[in-house]
Length: 291
Image: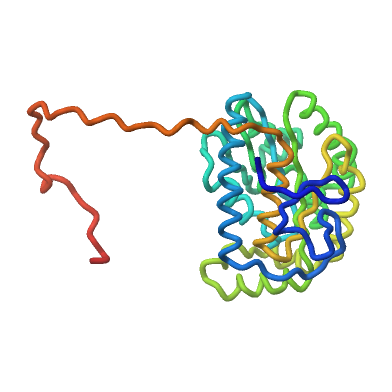
């Protein structure tokens, strides 16, 4: 059993992640203290072990799981997805991050290119952005018409209900980040050559249109935060805290049992039967750059 604490509203939360006032879940934006690296690594390892157990349960029961990760640019979606999938079998847990639609895809039913990536039995798919691009970048930047946008707002809830009726477990996360923190992360990317690729002209434009994106997000929530597939908002100003909270919440959404196999014993190697391997000097080796 995962070590959790039941709080006033009946929700389960790890004691280490409960705010100082004893509440968790929906709360006004605050600036929580940083999580020490040692504590973060220890809790992340525990949660990733639980994710592996969940993975085996999904495979064993033939579950079909879809998790959507949406939110502001630089809100930490990709980092959380990486930590979720890091220890899992890529044949069971797949990450889908689609690029700009092709000219052919633009003529298709809007949801069509996403449907192609939905899971079969025993699979879990993590969407790094999803069909909700229509309510965000496409709407704000004018990449879709007003009619297409309005159609999405009305058809998306029905589309998601259809997925759920088909047996798919749909979980939606919105990563919420404050204005100042996004500015700090953008500046960090600008000055770090290993992160600069994350910044695109579209990201910079989204920064300028902060209020437009806020309005679009609120409109999206009003139409698509439905009982069958509600939005779960992750306060993401602190990356480490956001990752732990999101993973813990994800584990609580799907009841599972521990199917970890019993420890196995390696069999002894077979005895040599006279086979002589070719000389090592006939192979091409990568040089040892770090002697």
